[in-house]
Length: 205
Image (cartoon, rainbow, N blue to C red; front, side, top):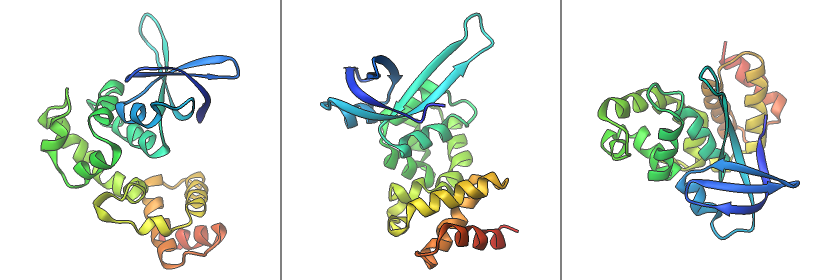
């Protein structure tokens, strides 16, 4: 799996970036948010989502590039919603930046979401119902300061991510885990990873 691609920005359009790394040119589909973030740069680092489509006459392998992990995580959440495909999710991230989109979902603002081309009322409502809790629990909300909450900015994100990863490997679901880990670190910011995991296991019984 490709985590990110770092190299020279060989070509750039509002929908596509070609990044040359080790002599290979990688074409990545991008949103306008990412386009704005890398425009004018010679060297870039794009976080990657790989999409493999099978079952048709021709299989296809597509790379999507994102300017930061938050945008990629939000994209991955969007495509889990029924009726929201890869291009629709990219259109949403082109119409609003991640903070605006997260706020719209968190606040149940279906009118704002409906302004995105291709999104009707039912799909907007489904996005809100499916993703509101996931966004608030995943850590994206705090990282993007959604709803004015900035508590997580003071947390040790390295410890948080390691603890969530460890608990995920133990079979727990990432969304509720992240919420528990954040609450522990907000109370005891200097706890080491192993202690955070032990405290979380008590709460996740």
